[in-house]
Length: 393
Image (cartoon, rainbow, N blue to C red):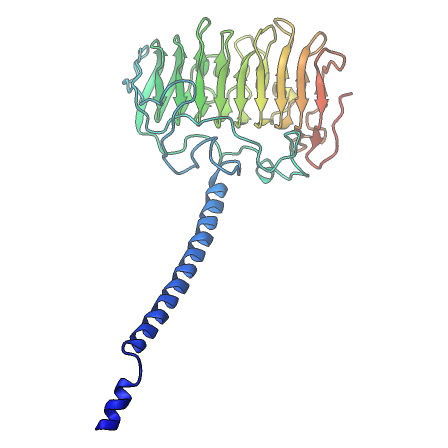
């Protein structure tokens, strides 16, 4: 008994408890380190997934909420986004704006993800989607419409926001700072959306605009998906546009990240095949026209009216101050009409001229009426879809 008592008291009291405590602390520290490592790896994976969800692959979706989501966003330069007025859609309905938004316009024009320094692709492209150009999957409304309307509607209230509509009709705008967003428009009028002279600030974003062949006002045809009758800039972005003869018609504007396709030939009221252009400018404007990172297709033959993927024509005045950068162009008589004699400030850079309809991109070639000697005119970095340089003849 005395020997056992000696053994029991020969070690400092409490040492076995401190040893066990030290082991527990060490194990806890190891577990914490492993947890932090897993969290860091997971965070990197989530960042990568978020980037992949952006329409053009940019590091953040500054150009818009990824498709299939309904994230909120503020409209830059126009205060906060706003909720849609919801008129019933009579033949002539005036609407008013309200201050809160369910989606909100995107923050800025999209970047040309997967492209080279000049805005064009970094290599040959088999299709628009293969090199990050807009397609049906990356344009149009980001979610299903929230309300249905019908009729050719007149907008007369500044700041109106048309958000989440499914409209069987058209919009005729006599107001400033109107926004059309996440909306589907099927028109049988002369146009889908028209801005009247004397008004400014129209934006058409993340929308789908199409017509009904044989039902339009021009002898059954529809002329303009978005028409700018004024002298201020109109923004059209991330939109899916089809059927109309001259789909995007304006002398000044910001046209970016759109998919323009399936232009529908028709014989117009004058008895001639309507000229078909994915983008058209008749010249004479004072502002700048920017055409950046769009897919612009003009598939019909010249015997049915096809003119150009981009037509910069001096019909009403000299063509000045246009930027044509990083677009996919295909079809037309020529894919690009470049402004002609007297044009200045025309910068054509980093575009892809595709042979998907014709071996020479357009029926007769890539480009016509390019004024190489015009002040400020620049031609650089333009290629065919298989990577060969394109030089105006």
